[in-house]
Length: 341
Image 1 (cartoon, rainbow, N blue to C red):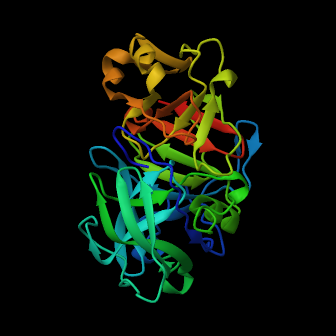
Image 2 (tube, rainbow, N blue to C red; image 1 turned 60 degrees about the horizontal axis):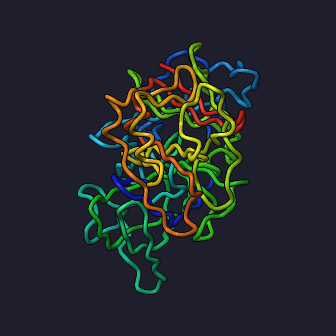
């Protein structure tokens, strides 16, 4: 979820049916994709099944989506019917939330084609700095192989939005067992993984490749991995427990839980620990995973917690810290969060 100084915990969900795959896998090392075979402006690429660490890939298949940096977030382009909508690639939420036709306050640009339906119930959701009135509509995402393979989805469509920073959101967070979110639909990421038997793995290529990969991805040899905590049944985030890190970690003992959120701009530290973190010369989680505070301290902001919203010892690491790495991978199959240059 995108925010500069605060975090909201309302969770929205979207039901995604599974992505249709080509009947035969493409085995070339480079695959050219025409307009009809694009999803999120990406394409299906087949790679060798191989292994990622000690984990054998289920299918060797991946979906590669171009990422674009826009000053404070990475975006992917999502094709809904005939329209392409730019959405934040966000590991801090689990929903697909897009602008509707005639929306008041929505981002400029393409919108979802359906108008607000007076006969449908509306829901007010809050995430980041946005408050939006939404309705769930049936839609089709252009799949692999042309219109005949478009997939049916349920989308949370915004019709009235307020807030200091308003965006479409492609939520890539996870919930335990793909449990339905607040509005009753399973998370987008769970549906994509389960529908296509993909590796449960999201990789951000933030270096020269600028790509988002779902499914199989072999890490560079210099990758450093941290242990991911078990998924939450209520909070759609990737977390690492401070207690699971080695002796190289120099965070204050008051920091207990680390959340890694690609949709958040700043690094947010619970207020009682913010000064201690800022006072460090360098924040280190493990050898090879560190941030010199002379360069990255400017992104640290105090996190004001609403009662019961997050663990008291929370530190949320946002995209301005994460984008120093060439690769950041969230692999639920191996329970590893990996970083590489």
